[in-house]
Length: 528
Ligand SMILES: *[C@@H]1O[C@H](CO)[C@@H](O)[C@H](O)[C@H]1NC(C)=O
Ligand SMILES: *[C@@H]1O[C@H](CO)[C@@H](O)[C@H](O)[C@H]1NC(C)=O
Ligand SMILES: *[C@@H]1O[C@H](CO)[C@@H](O)[C@H](O)[C@H]1NC(C)=O
Image (cartoon, rainbow, N blue to C red; front, top):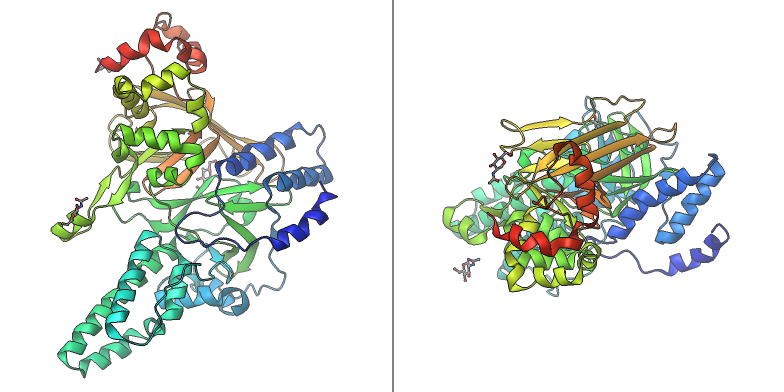
């Protein structure tokens, strides 16, 4: 693999530039997630004796497999640690002039980045990351008023659809008036006539909306504690500074997912944003340079739609039985307009175990036919309901539930009880109540340290004994974990009554019970 690397390099240089970060999540694939997550650990653990050079070989193999360079460059020695994150961003216009422009426009986030008394982490997308999106507005700018208005609405619509720092930055480039101080426009409007006043009010309001969106996105780039790359590598998700404000996610801080490889260390956020330069030390924490801006994630259902190659069967099943509301969370424009305040519909909080297309493919052909026929409609409905946990955020390191069955009232916990800084290992198992009445899923979570190196942890999650392929994928209304088998719901079937054999029974059920589905599934579907 090492010999190949120089040959591949010219190809990499010829590759097209990264796709526009607006609209869809770029470069995101479940196979990459699971390859990174399981591949590197499996290969490293098969090494009989640990050596750094061998570890490096493994990393090169994986780089070649994935077609992505995973190497992380540690921060330059030249950082002036007496300066705040904000001062350092401003001092480096070659890398961050675009980000600084957005921060100055937004006007609040930079105060945190400049606060010497805080200790925080910031993910800073560099100038390349904030290149204007590929699609352009065809209009040219002749200063015409109505024209501005149309353009303005298009920008707002675009930002509402896919809030992105790149769109924000190009908006600021196109409309430099947005950068004018509010005060100036205030004093201007005082001396102007009524019509002008109205226009100014509209413009001001629009500017406020854009500024608010900018604030949300920027907060999603910050963590409220200072973490080095190695520290980030020890956990699967981290809470950002952005609190859910739309009634979803239990009002908790929205999370980012961190994936890592160890040697050399490399980090990827939410599956697509790579840390290019890590651990730049400032007087008030660390900042890490990103090659893509982060997007606060869409709903579980919207995310599943982004990966038709993996989840088309699931999404069509969900639509077929009108279960979208259980996994979606979307803005209801009509109702919001008529009620005069924002209204959303769907499930504000849920965790889904999402069977991939492979999972459905592994079902007996006759069962698939049955489930997707009119006769199997109710069975499909119940089966899907068994795959999500309502009103609950279930992550490998964090649990929060508003579900009446789980706790008396909302409660949350970090699973760190047994862990310590030296060894964060833990094993946890518990049952969660699903969307199917009285049916639970047995969840087992293991965090194990496998090398005497900080960040060398492996995290697994099992549902009814099945290992999830990708875990802790953050969504606007919760999280999801990918399964490569469809879970078998609990049902009355001879031989599984004995309490003492409960564990064994669960294993049997999850392994091959679909074989005899005809004996129980239709009857099971008919019971309430
Ligand atoms: C929203 O209202 C518009 C116009 O009143 C109507 O055409 C549209 O069907 C409505 N959409 C929904 C989802 O109700
Ligand atoms: C990281 O995970 C541990 C459990 O291993 C947990 O106690 C801790 O709170 C987590 N840290 C963050 C920032 O979520
Ligand atoms: C649900 O489970 C409880 C306790 O196991 C039982 O008493 C109850 O009858 C069950 N309800 C249904 C509808 O199966």
